[in-house]
Image 1: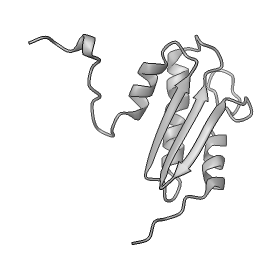
Image 2: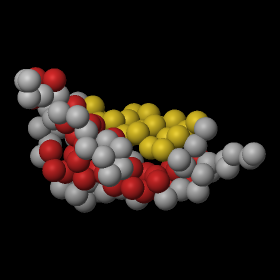
Image 3: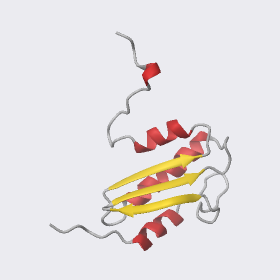
Image 4: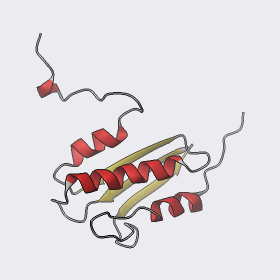
Length: 114
């Protein structure tokens, strides 16, 4: 059983296509990528928001675009995207990393009491 190798150059190419929708520049040119790891078909990417109060819809779009673009790379089986430095980071990270077609569980404080 062979494992497909993920081409790191293709991963970098896909990341460089992601544009900040508010500013209109690629996030790579803005130096927002803090971590990019590829291992065993999994890609972990961490980036920071341009400002702590960047509109959450834009931060979510960047995160989702990263995930969607990276899932197109041959050999990539999973992608985890983490945004840091944003006041809504936890919710954005949960949303973008929830299983496909699945609902993420509500936080404990929002779970109905029985």
